[in-house]
Amino acid sequence: MQTEDGQIISQCLNGDSAMFGFLVDKYREGVYALAYSKLGNFHDAQDITQETFIKAYQKIRTLKRHDAFALWLSAIANNLCKNFIRSKLKRPDREFAEDQSPDILDNNSMDSYRDNLIHESLQEALNSLPEVYRQVLMLHYFSGYKNMDIAQLLGISLRTVAERLHAGKERLREEMITMMSETFKEHRLPVGFTFRIVEIIKRIKIHPVTQSKGIPWGLSLATGIIIAILSLNPYVPQLDQFGTISGAPLLSESKVLKVGEIPVDVVKVSNVLILSSKMGKGKVGEPKISDMRNTIFMDPKAEGGWKQRADMPTARNGLSACAVNGKIYAFGGMGEGVYNSISTVEEYDSATDKWTKKADMPVPRNNATASAVNGKIYIIGGIFWDNGVPQPVYARVDEYDPVSGKWTQKADMPTARSGLDSCVLNNKIYVCGGLLGPTATTPAFEEYDPARDLWAKKADMPTSRLSLATCAVNGKIYAIGGIPDMNSPGISTVEEYDPNSDVWVRKADMPTARGGLSAIVINGKIYAIGGYILLNGPISLATVEMYDPKTDIWTKKADMLTARAYLSTSVVNGKIYSIGGAGQNAPLSTVEEYTPEDWQSNAISTKGKLPSAWGRMK
Image 1 (cartoon, rainbow, N blue to C red):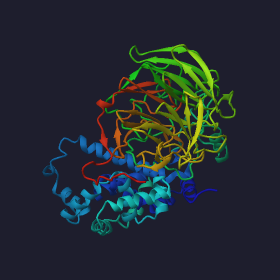
Image 2 (cartoon, rainbow, N blue to C red; image 1 turned 30 degrees about the vertical axis):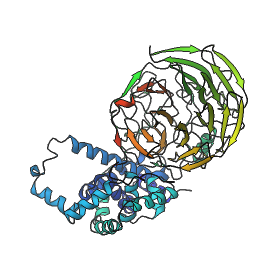
Image 3 (tube, rainbow, N blue to C red; image 1 turned 45 degrees about the vertical axis):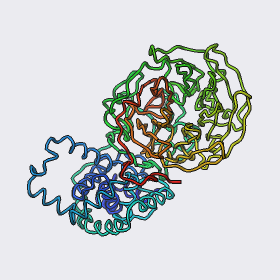
Image 4 (cartoon, rainbow, N blue to C red; image 1 turned 180 degrees about the horizontal axis):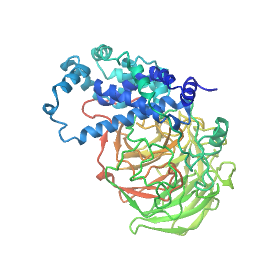
């Protein structure tokens, strides 16, 4: 059944541009609030709001999922805000107000302030909040949006909206809440705003978009759901490029988008989100991310710290990787060509920057998990695809000895599953979540003791999900992000497990909701790397965010050079290696190295200006 937005968009595409005014009226206050939450200036926010709707109309033919219009619109607004901020920073005279004309100064004063003291106090209070809280407060008090409206625009759950509103209000004094409501009433969009937009777009001709030769995104809802159920990666299958099971979980209301929480900075939306693989080649046929950003959640250039290393011989996504004795071992995955899981094992030596072929796994599989204990690597679970046909998921466990190259089958995992993840604590492997197949996710949490070859059932995760990431730090285990079901986008949920009490506790959400990510621990911090969000199809991410379990605070870090999902990460000699994964149009062989000590961070939480309990959402 077509949504109200979809009906309006269809009429716009059929030549009735005036119908777009209904969409402007419906979302203008929300876009205005989002713009103000990023810019802190009513005049600039109004300009960005107008530009957002004009750009949305110009590009409306690129929106294949009409029911995702609100999310798409918010992504455009965030992108324009980021570009606006960047352009201001590049102006050499940006700090010299005296160089501006009196008219500009007067306009800024009229549009952005009721009173300098009140405005500065309000801005200081709002700026002390992470953007995810600031956004929902703006939408609630500025736009008058109900929780359902906020959830739709930001692509987050109603529960998340309620949590963020509650947490945001708790961190602002009551008088600030009252001041915020009164100030916003004086800075509404002008009455003629919608009319002005409609008059502008009447002169804009919507041109059809040339279809990419890449993935066939324009599938029917039923077909898309079937593909999503049959796959663990968010990419629709394509015989000549992916060789992967892929299929976008179709969003009804997506949580990244959550742009998931669109919490993370949206920097650049490509003119065509799905780039053809012919539009510039990297080493294995992926678009050149360094100069053609095809993902919306990454800076236009890395901040430094990441560098390219030797490509893995076999391009693949859904692989598992593990480090032992200073070497990294990549296992299985989905390669290029026909939809077949592979059994390939390759070893990477970071000291020489070289790859070596090793003995294949006993059975081919992808979306398994790998963990190392006492110099042995354990490949657990996964799924086997045979010429495009998915087989039952595995409970199988195979032990690999990197020294001898020998494989040994071990006791099966109690719960057969794929899309799971694992981590090691006290020489035991903890396996978390996954897909039971073909549609059901699981919260199953099980412990494996390699010394005794025994499995034990532990308390289930509170949130059932697959394609998540897990890490162990300071005696606790953290389950991060993932996909709650095959019809949903990624989530930002973080849950902590205490093996002593066998109890799970909710922690601060990851800023960017996503599935298909990887996470790794270094220096007591967790780095959540890559993944994907949904926006008119799956969009790979280069996003890197760091979590400090001691403070329960997330911090933005420099993006990878190459956006990707379903990658794997390992640490060797204090450096992080991101390996393989799914780019926008093909499985990748890309390997990138990061030195955390060299990262230039951009803190999401403003430490020092907030209460010590900041970010602790249980």
